[in-house]
Image 1 (cartoon, rainbow, N blue to C red):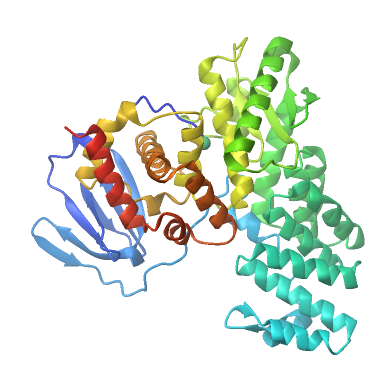
Image 2 (cartoon, rainbow, N blue to C red):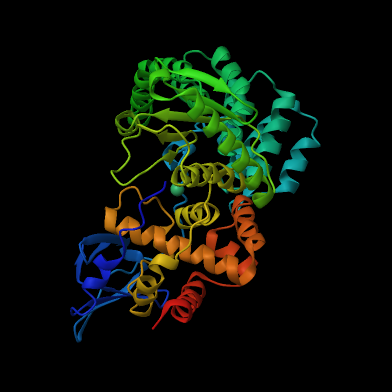
Length: 483
Ligand SMILES: [Zn+2]
């Protein structure tokens, strides 16, 4: 998503002189805050007019004025990082694994999974018995385990091997489709999801998966139908929310036209966009596409849906926060009221949103939000220079939002906090690019796509932890913009 970043970070800086409470994190870092509240499992803190929350398990203690207040938490530090894919929520992604309650499958998992990993020798021992069905179940169990532990390639390979033996198992077909969808390969997944639904038309979980395969393949009408059937068999708040989103989209798009080029499918309403505007949009997007293929060393396989809305329809469909200018949730959604041509600002919006599609492809949808937004802003291109001085002050006062807390989405942030989040994200990516080269930025994305956590990918590529990166960033900002 892209914001007006001209509104600056002053909100946070206004309160620099006030007496602060200090949250000491277990990783050695500290966050100064105006006010801190203990909410049981979370610590909520206020900074300027904004409120943030962090898991209490990350907090060592809170220093209030001169009195240190130890927190009573004895939980281990959280090691899980919340990767946010704008295209699919974590809950939806998890729902792509269907029917794991099978007793046969669970027994097999106990045989071939040891210490959370697939034991290849155990799988081979079952292969060597020559029992085809058991071998298929072993591959299936190994595929599911690989999926759960983030080994996307392994999951796909094992499930494909299982399907080669039992090509008409709805459970296998659905899970193979799910594995492909996690890889963002929606059009590849669709025939498997369709076949699974044909073979088991009474299964709500399979129909829910089929709905997602249609929706992300830009086939909203079929998605609505599949999700409705799924809900009739199995109530699910998540599927209900997805259906509502698809229906909002369909209501707006009913009168839309469609136009395809090599890499894009454009949806537009005739009255709202001139043919000249559409031509300019597609020309700009095709030019951006070529640039991004060079930058990221990949080319997305599926045609990318682009939807042009009036401003009001954009808000109705996306329910995006007021500060959003455009959105990429698997489709590029662009509000263009009263626009007759692609202005310089509009060209940046287009490149930014398209960059998210490439980043999603490289990272298989696992990119943390700060890196996702930082890279998309950097390729627009955009620079931190206009807000460099404010950023330098923010970092030297240790009042930045830790990057680790920016791994999840920003859409719940208020305008002020979102502005800071985007500015820090861009500053971090600029720092990596200017110090190590853009190829290292791409390598970090690739390593995340291969299953590393963000911190592991940072260490493997630029030999920095989050803490190191923020310290380097503070020094760099101060050198460039400090007084
Ligand atoms: Zn963005």
